[in-house]
Image (cartoon, rainbow, N blue to C red; front, side, top):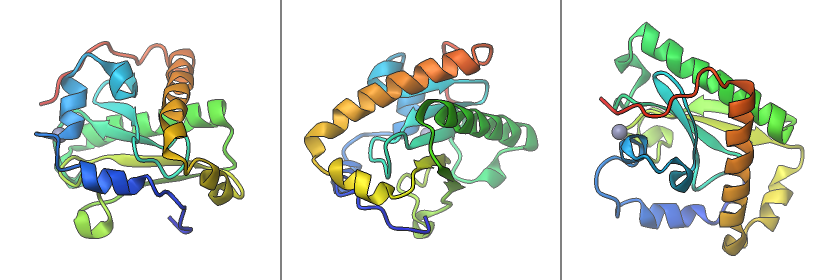
Length: 174
Ligand SMILES: [Zn+2]
């Protein structure tokens, strides 16, 4: 992130993340309740899920099904599948939300800023000129769930439209 975005609901994440037993990504990947968990697409090797504590509306995380903490623990094929899903997420966000820019990246380790450091994930963050101001409007935490539901529906529809051939019903964690 080159520019700090005002995202006060992230404090809820910091307070909340100790409560769930197990790995939050593995728990969601092995569940069949994709809508509830805001998983917007499943492909071979990787899936895309809304970040529940986003920097901007449409901020998604792309995770391998495999529970690893570092890209070096994936072989080249697994990294390829993960990156393909990152590229799909970028295409869908561009198509559905028309950002003027995107931040794409991965934080390896707690000291690099990884909130869930035990399970690798790419951040794909749509950006708009002046979006720090837009996010101030979203600072009312009561409006956030509505944004998730509506954004996740739009993104799921976008994935289905642009990449129907990659969608997989179920893929379990290793
Ligand atoms: Zn995991």
